[in-house]
Image (cartoon, rainbow, N blue to C red; front, side, top):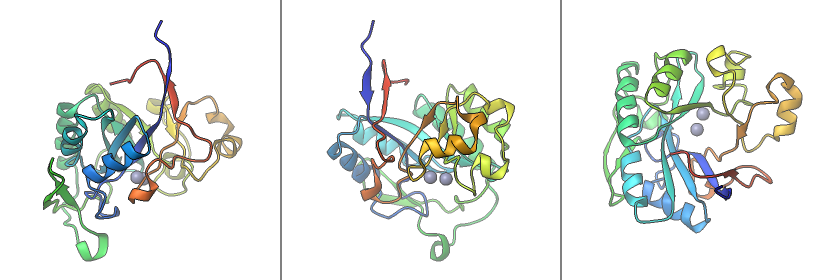
Length: 234
Ligand SMILES: [Zn+2]
Ligand SMILES: [Zn+2]
C-alpha cells in the first residue's frame, strides 16, 4: 500500500490575467514564491480564462511543483466555481466553451484592471480584450456537466461568502453538487461555517489562499496544513 503523503497545496491563485490581481502575479513569480514556501501543488485559477496556465505548466516542468490546470468560472447565477482539469488539452477545450459564453463586453482597464497574458519566459505578450470579471452564460449544471465530461472536477469557491458563492447566491447546493468538495475561505473557521450550515458538515472541504498578491500565496487559513493523498489526482 502506498504511504499517504501530506501535500501542501494552494489551489486558488489568480495570475495577472485576472483584472483584480497584481501585475506581479506572473506565472513565473507565482511558481518561484510557491517553491520558496515549500508548496507541493498549486493551481492557477483566473476568472473565466486559462491563458496563463500553459506558461505556468512549462515554467514548472523542471521543478518539483505540481501545477493543476484551473479556472474560477462565474456561472450565470453569479456563482464562482473552481474548475480543475487533468491536463492542458482539457482546459483549453473548456476555455473555448467559456469564451463562447462570455458576454460581448470589453475590459475597461482603468476601471477593472489589466488582463495580461504571459509566455514561458514570464514576459507579458498580450492582453485579453474581453471582460473576464463577469458572469458567463453557463448555468451551474452546464458547468458541472461540461467540466466532468472532460475529466475535471468542480469545487464551489468560498462558500462562506455572501456574494458570488453558491450558498450566498442560491442558499443551498443543487443536486449536481450535493456531494462535492467545497472551498471555505481562509478567513472563515470551518467549524463556524459548519455550525451555521449543519446540513453541509459531512462535505469534505479545501482551503486555499485566493491570492491576488504574491505575499498571499500559501496563506490558506490558520492551522490549515494541506491534505493527505496517496498520490496526486492528476
Ligand atoms: Zn471568487
Ligand atoms: Zn478567486
